[in-house]
Image 1 (spheres, rainbow, N blue to C red):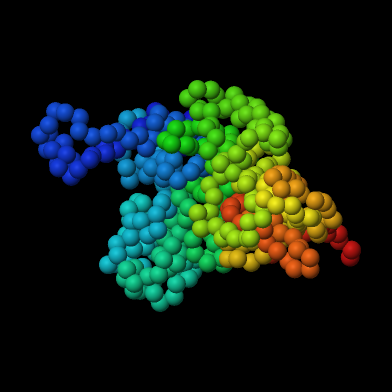
Image 2 (spheres, rainbow, N blue to C red; image 1 turned 90 degrees about the horizontal axis):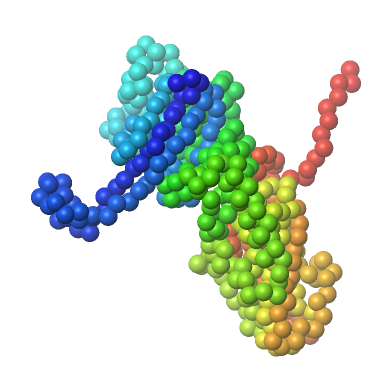
Length: 439
């Protein structure tokens, strides 16, 4: 297999979707010759390779087929068509507590999992202290795992998976569970594993982790492999998928052409976005919060808005350190003097991180006549730490000395900041650091 440790060749995974249990039973027992089901392709002609020592990320929306291909690689599922070749001992962390016997104690499950991976009792004995130290669940290790909290479950599962010294580690979203301290310990171990030259196949919605740890990324959408390449290039294409723009499929062009095509499409999008006089409905490019908190007296109405990255693409995923723009279009139902356009970001726990408005920025709008529409454009560098945030926009002002909210959209859109380096707190100070020996 040369230096490839994983090869996926022309893999399909098809599920039969029946209208009723009766139809399912009839098909299972061969009582009908008629095709009484619909075929759902979870994977279609999937092809890729992973070389020894690579860390490869799989990205895509929910339901794209990422977890399905991992289960086929690890032997949990069988492909409908195609072949998978694996050269090396695999340790897989696919689902919380997968492979654990609920009635067994933690200790018993450690030996059960180790035995399934081909280790002898003596070999597991040698690794037991490292596993228990990493899991750090105390005396609960002697209790049945059915009594564990979800946090204990993932601690033990990850401790077993990463401490039995596999040649290939396959991880599906497991690094995002547990408290922040356990996550930090997992990532440290993950880095050690990578530095040791082990092979890693990594599925995550954390685009920052994909960008930081992976040598290469594979983008999957609706069961198709769209493209593969550098994490940055794949994340750029993935951001278009997130806002509903159809990607260029890998089956139609090679990866380089796909990336070039997407870049050209982004430039075209940029030209459309720059034309504020058109009828483009910007907000239709995003999945909006169905529970948005909207209120105001109605004298002005926010009719459209957009978040645009430095490539001119509609997106709600912004690379840390890049420049991005937020546009807010307001229709005025009456004459308003000097309305204030606002923009705010908060954490998903509701803590305000930063924000500004046209009054703070000394951008006086003047008199906005009834029936007119204005677009406020906020352009800035993204220096918030990687993670998930909520964006709010509003149009407010003063009626004499009284403050008035004309229209507010609180938590209207989720913003994902993609980062390969996070510091302490909400914001990066962008410090320039030097260390010199003075003695």
